Figure 1 (cartoon, helix red, strand yellow):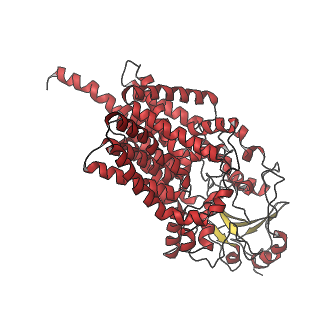
Figure 2: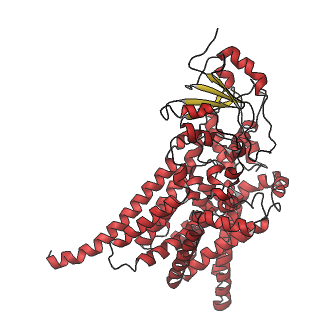
Figure 3: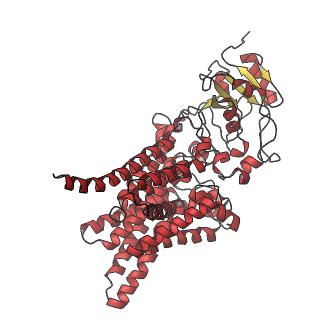
Length: 552
């Protein structure tokens, strides 16, 4: 090859290499954010919905109810299978969502291959990789990471089905129907998003019939609708009939406000700074306009899906929808398309740089700065076993997060301050009792000080019988690593822990909240009789040394 021809190849190759590096780095970084410390996370808040159902119901009960506290039927059946075959662990509860979160990074550019170019694809995956909402839901034992992936597969498959002919068309139709069925079974909230394609292409089919007297598109849509409806009916009719009253009780209760909508937009973009929100929205407009020039159908399609879903959810007024995180969670399937437009807008902007090698570098720098401006760096310290706590996830701005603003003002107990003088991650504490709601979990604040590992001590039956956020030691199907039983500690099992910390009173957000709490003072004599006198005591905690028991 001549020198001149080599010179012609190199400039075309290097920019592609830069964008491939952005893409590969984004996938690796996104996988890391979804996996790091995942095995040590303590199950909190809504992650307990499925556990409670598992403890109090059989397979038929799981299949035929949604429950007042939605537990996701397929996930709970999966958990039940594992509990009956070797025991359910925290890791196994998290794995399907982690896989879905990582799969989205890998599949997103493949699903739209041919529709987007490499720079936009790489930037898009980078934005998905660091999206706080996607990271959070990929680490949470709730169905949203799975429903997001399946919803995107469904709506893209529908569009491929519309434009394809022959055997491949049948394949895409089947993929759409199955993905819609599974997403809807995992959570009903996906159905507005995944069923709206019928409205978009139904209008087009009607126009074609009126203009060309061609009714084949309408017949095709009707057949696909019937197939999809039959699949959905097999899974949803029984629980809909069995839970109609409960579903009705959770709708028409709360309302989206202008303030909550604004804070939802901040969460979707993944920032707390309104200036960054404006920048993101401006890039999204530029990107959408760029797509509009070459594929107006795509822009109209995803706009209808996102806008229609938002309107349907808002009008349904589900419980807690006034909280920004709830609406953001329900809009999760639309977020990747919004990020795609932002990515395309960023690529258009850096395309103004004359030196092509600066373009992927500039995008990488922008992504890094966006990540640093977001909430994730604040909770990546180790160990942090409560990354899903509302202190980190309810709102990305501490000035608007009630789990920061309304916490009790009492100082951190001196015991935890003393532990901070020991090497980090060198000790393990068992904290008991507890409540599963973030409102009553102080451990993220304490762990940020002492930097030691935590396990949760379940006090049934030592301090009374409790079944909310607890289960008996006899429940052999649950093999949770970070939930242990105080009753077993009294028989000599220390679970590898150094200290047992008994909390005399509840830690409440807000401080005047009502909460049921065991009479810890009444059960302390039982613990002292088995372990020995405490090594630390103040108005809120009593601490026992498990490594140096006094059994005299």
